Length: 275
View: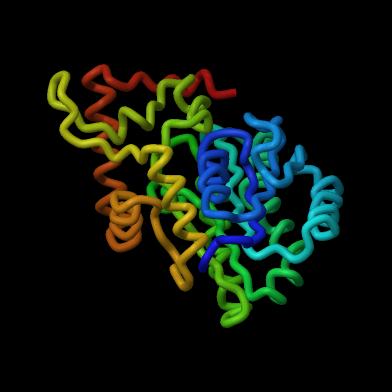
């Protein structure tokens, strides 16, 4: 799909992956409309920006209506916004858990529903940003992993339901060094260290996805038809398929990695700090 002149709505554009992807989409000639609870980094960069809490369904419905009035039918919806919370096993369904599921699952659902008539008229595309945490298990990320896995399932249903009328792609970012990981870092769960393999002071291998490369991958997901599931980088796609094909092996590897890093003093998990 040539993005020149295409109308793209993307959530989570105030920073991180959404901001980087929005910048690249603009360079490709797309009309880019951003949604975020935070103010934009560069006012005026995008063709439209709506500051909205994605958990506020009434406000979100009003934004969908405003975009449809101001810009007409959209071509691509990118559900990129996400939030990561941490829970101990005894944590119940708290307000933070409910909000995480709202942002990661129900907001994309509502956005798809609101824009769907126009997307079908244009035979457009939905790109849902899931996470490798939907496939690769880790401790204390129950709400995030469950909601991202549910988003992947929602994509599969949507794709089947509107086969031939709507292109639906699910992308699975790996670790990108952005603010979403700050809650995990505060309790000693450094995903960056988990995906970085070192020998002494030397880095032998890093599975970190650089922000610009990940943004380029998200834009490619907007451009190419019929992708279904994909990582944002080559290593991300490899990790995605490995987790799908051999989940028990990946589980055992992650568990071993956590034990090894903890015993070596490279990780110091403090679950008691999780609220």
